[in-house]
Length: 87
Image (cartoon, rainbow, N blue to C red; front, side, top):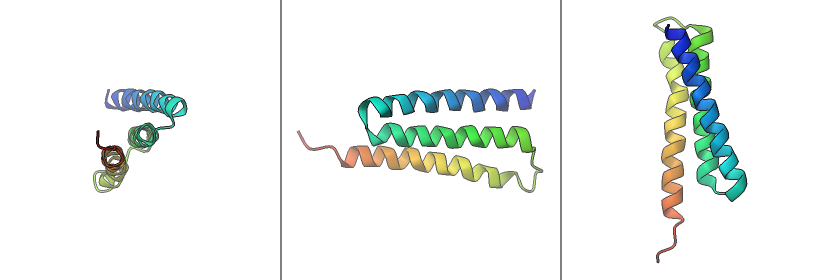
């Protein structure tokens, strides 16, 4: 059951990444590109957990992909807010 849920999470993250990529193509806003990359990283994380089934002692290395994803989201939000001109 866990593998099925991890696969579902991977598929959902990939679909979300495709939506953000489409928004990036339409607007050329870096926020959407970084969000797309972040969700691709999350999709890779869930896929790796489901297919490679790491042991308990090596599972934390896979969470580095999640860290990359969350850092990309953080950088995207900071970048978006920094580039805003005051009204």
